[in-house]
Length: 234
Image (tube, rainbow, N blue to C red; front, side):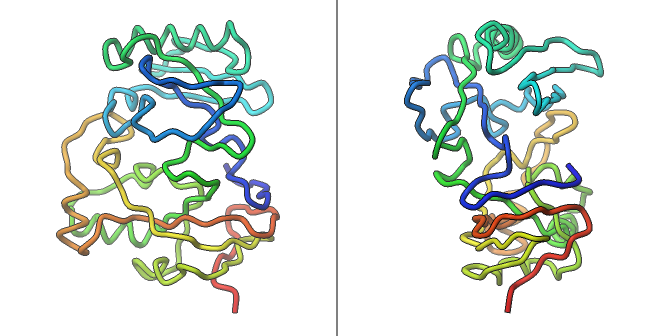
């Protein structure tokens, strides 16, 4: 995305709105609630997901799935038939990893399917990613860290000094709430699904923690776009 509109106390539009719940997960669509990521198909345990590419259409709620550059399935996530098509595909593709028939679930109201039980934005400092590359000895695709906003121009790890502070981002004002502690999902190559490195170990060895990025809540809404200035408000 090159631009987005931020709304107070909300996540980025459509971020973590849908998830693929495991067949063993109990979820009431009429009264949705937060669940930990272990309730869903997710990269930490299901690295085969990274071998697929997906495209989501905001206007139609349609998800299109590609494998090796070829379209293999499409379905509208807000339509029962469309959800069934997507569920059947992942059941066949992921096999026993789904623990039964997976089901598409939707977060509504105050619910989010983020790693934390609140609506936040994730911000990644590219300089910190490059510093981790130095320690790990390999080039890293920043997509591994699944940020909503990627920033440059800071010193490595300077974003951690923003905790508890308000920052301006484009026309919006955010409050930084916590550092993002990472799980084994970052060890999965987002292009191939390979799990050949241990970035958690590299983070701990090089920096004494397993964090990458920060969470922030939107306090005052506004538009943000590529090239905007971001920083602490005096």
